[in-house]
Picture 1 (tube, rainbow, N blue to C red):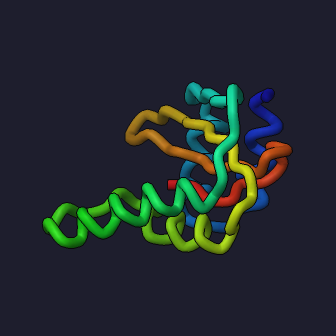
Picture 2: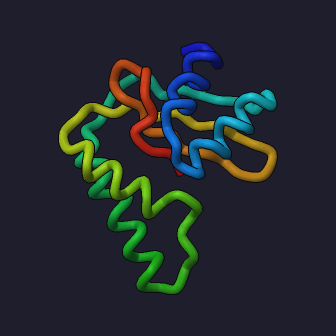
Length: 108
């Protein structure tokens, strides 16, 4: 995946986290695509919804975009998801991409 492909995928996502990730990417931040395998959105939803609930139950402030990402992963159902990260100057973003890498399903 090239930088401009990830920029295009993020540009289609109007979430606050995706906008912040796009700014970091355009500023030259490092990114990585984990393309060795995809995972179902449902499996990711199961993991991240549990983490989110534990944070809420224990008083830990969830990372920005987590609640919205959990909702979007749930809505994606059994779609296959690829993961990417952007390591920005202030934070690290996790991007959940469609299997064909053309759209961001969620970003946190």
